[in-house]
Length: 140
Length: 380
Image 1 (cartoon, rainbow over the protein chains, first blue to last red):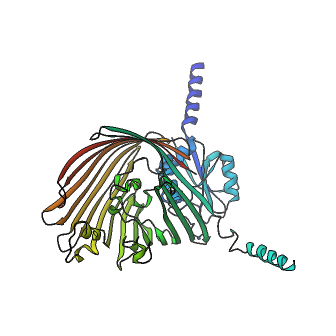
Image 2: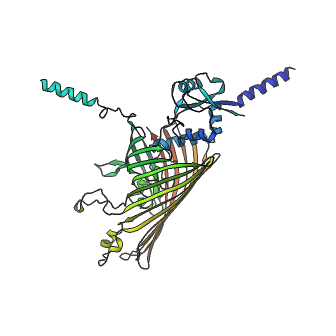
């Protein structure tokens, strides 16, 4: 019995370690309630810089390597090194600035709450009432 | 005394006006990068080794959003340990443009700019972006002293419209069209103002491309007229009608491809160049490169690449001269952090010259030049 409990415990630990649940969050001023994968990619690559109401899209990203960050970039289909080179290219061509890198989920939620037009991503369980969630991503 | 007070007040109030203060739509941003390089070169023909430390390139950018949708951008470039006192290297005003952005579908740049042509032309001097130390040969600006680097691609334009149009679910149609001068820039003060074009012809060109997922392909073209052969009149003492060397039509065609699959990437392009008129003047150039890359992790990128360049001249009947470069290369690039990229590269330049000049003995020479380099590209 002890062994079975230990095994269950181990499975739970492994599962929680493997699953990353990500929430794509925006400032409440953003005029949309859902987002498609292609839109998300366009915003994060800087191809599209305005929301449908013409206000600027302010992209924020998580600085530290984490399962949440990995799951997010997996979802949009670009690994972080590709994203870095896309941002650097935009910057060095005078076409756009790279997104501000935020240290952790709590700081990210606070930043999105207080920045009109901002979009970012955090772990699902860190979302607060001060932001709007456009999408949940789950990666096994 | 009163006069000085009034004068001081006037200066202070002038300094506070939005024009003189930095109160535009955004702050003035100053940033740039440099690449320090250690190269070891071994020339098989001369059996000689040489080592050189150099500041291969330094670029400084000034950028400011001057009003909603308007951005000004200036790039100043210094090459090869630039020193005007010692007459080393070169300093260039590479770009100075104003951009109006209506949306992603339409942008307009005015001023001195690097036109879009294939993959690399507009980013060839952005060393932190490129994994190479020695870039694919027609983009290696620091080689321009001994190879016709600037002939292969359009060097500058003065107005460019560009953007992309989305279609379907995730495909994008890219376009760029530009106008500029022919590169017949006058450097002789006796013939008028230096630094301006001396012909009435335009450079016109553009690129159309398609992006779909991780695949990107494009086709480029440019057309202008050139006077590069005019000095040949004097060198070969031609006399008579030499108008065939003036304003010779020049066409460049290119295509490019980029593809990413998981950690692998494939990137390449071709350029076909023709400078020809109705008589015997005919210059062809051809270039391609192909790079296979592997992104090991966020920091480390490894690649193998092959570059080929051909220059073929025919200025007189039955006289064809050829110069070819074949350059296989391997390299690594490693992001030490977001600001510093370390690089290592080994290349062998297999050079073959088959020259039959009418006023000198023929040359059929082959040589291999080995280039090993390490570099740090620093973004600030």
